[in-house]
Image (cartoon, rainbow, N blue to C red; front, side, top):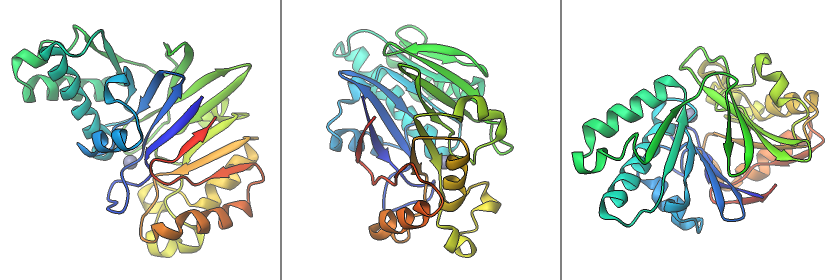
Length: 266
Ligand SMILES: [Zn+2]
């Protein structure tokens, strides 16, 4: 299996795309979030992925930098279904608020000839805290991260052989996620900026954490590999080097600070 980072930045970045990614198992794909717009199509193309192969999409929460790219996916899927060039079905998962927005936007923004496929061949699926779904042959469990900003879900993905990949969304780990995050083979966690630059970027007032915080957390959760994302982009050319240097002081597993379009073997 592999993971392709389509984007790695926070909501306001201009030097990279907003955080979203694809987990792939051979020719099957699970896309998580869409970033903030039409550039999701560009990123998929640059990554060598066909947008049409994104048959299972999960949207973590309603913030613009996550949901608007999914609106473009809804449009593309419905448009190509109408043209007769999109075979089969697609599924978008999200909690009730997310699905309600996607359905309303699809119904109001797309012409009827396209929107008619919503809830017909494009399934908008509401997930509750703890719900499971089978996605590309793997069990995925969705969970509420307990956000106080906008309701947000993360997920844990059963990789087989007792191994799991857990995504905590774009907010700091909350102890209600412990049963999912602890002992994960892979943990995806946000890191807004370096701890050393916390006074410049003020991550805590935005409900975000630093590289040090995320790495200390991963150490205590007995995680084998950590992927940091949803970062600031002011020094993106050196981001990997600087974040790796800070993170390795606090975490002794395998640390990843991917750039956009980077592919990680899981
Ligand atoms: Zn975000």
